[in-house]
Length: 491
Ligand code: AMP
Ligand code: MG
Image (cartoon, rainbow, N blue to C red):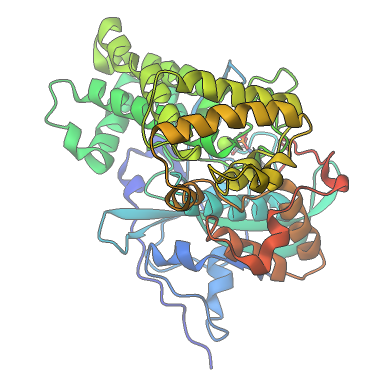
């Protein structure tokens, strides 16, 4: 028996913007689609169930082969700065928004967008497709970030096909359905600013304010308030990325969300052997988007947004005032997160030195970032013998031992309780992150049509702070073969 997948009718708020903001179009059909992954957690945010066998239309709707009820598919135009250089018009070159559905929690609406659904007027030289490899990576990482409590777009499902697409080598096509209240980017504002279409710029800003920041409308200068709030969210997001060791890889202004979400997963990575200069995108030869640069680039991008909003805000002084707090907000949030990672309940003046000394050790020894903080949570103040698991991660044992003396003194000074601290540290230092080799393993199996590893990894990463002893090996150091895994922009 066939039955339709219970999808409420779509609306499309974005389509209420003037026609210059987007192009209506149909996705390009994807031949013989099959289900690669599905996130129950993402689905729950719009009250959708896991598709059952009889829901034969599910694959067709999310492969772009069948238009869902109420859907008016469209691709949006935007521009942006890529690697610090004005790139002019870009746009949804392979993303097609189906429309929006009511959020299950009653808080607004959520857009569903197919990524890899075929060519659009903004495809430039691209083929409008996404490969299975990058689609699985985006799917797994969106859901992993959400489970880590980091603001992000979500991913509902990945649908694969044997259709060939050419990258460095032939690969196969896939479509990932992403979800967010909005996919509007800093580059969406820059688009109208650099085209000197200030009326459209105002329409965009007013729409963003009304739909996503209504609390700012009564402000004396709502546009300034909007820039200030986006700046705050971006600074906070950067602190969260740094604290968990997430590297985005392509922080162009067209990949920066006006809602402060992690957006456009490409050559991202999680820090393994700590190196502040690490560049996760091997196309980024200058290291513009290296780990240590991310906070500064977040700020640079906010300035680019500020520039674009200048005609609305009114003056350079007001624009600068809206941007002024970035650094302080980042520093405060980052310090707070690092204190939590170290299990410190209070902030003391000497902590800066303690944290600096620790990062010098992590850097000099290439210590696995995730494992280190997780194992540090098990440290007992009165029992040095128990330090072995964390100590084992560090080649220069005397350096660690000397640091641990300081750390213990600091813990004693705030009467830290071992058990309470372990619980608190394990609640903020994940045991499981999406290591490149884990993603690669799931991808390799998916290429053989075995999707079980995608599902398993997604389930493990749904509970990154839990011990999950049965999945211990997913918390292990990367194997030798994974040392030289490279991720590029190609997707
Ligand atoms: P990204 O750096 O991946 O965020 O992409 C930058 C721009 O290139 C965006 O406008 C994308 O839509 C576009 N793009 C990337 N890959 C493709 C593709 N295969 N086909 C069409 N457009 C693409
Ligand atoms: Mg992009």
